[in-house]
Length: 140
Image (cartoon, rainbow, N blue to C red):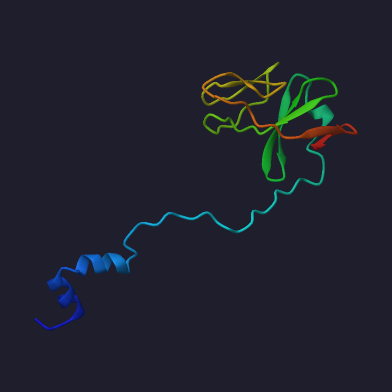
């Protein structure tokens, strides 16, 4: 047998440890990126006309690449929520009366506060700051 590095390592029992060392040996954990996050840009215009969000109802709108659920709780007040159900990530539906419902597993949320009223979700919807300006709903 010719004398080669492989043969010498195999004969001395070092082949496997050396091969592992050459390949990194131990699995590595992925480190979080140190690159700064890009800020989410808000849309330049309104999210919706106030008249397009019915009192006691709501509307899903696009706000700079993310969805926002607008809920009109009175003639002059609109609430904003991230429509992602905290239980399994499905998009909740605009409210019927005072209840927002998730179509996936049936979690329910109070339309006026976003708080959970029925599981399996354990927490409420995240709020998105919105306001009414000149008959338009905009990000606050």
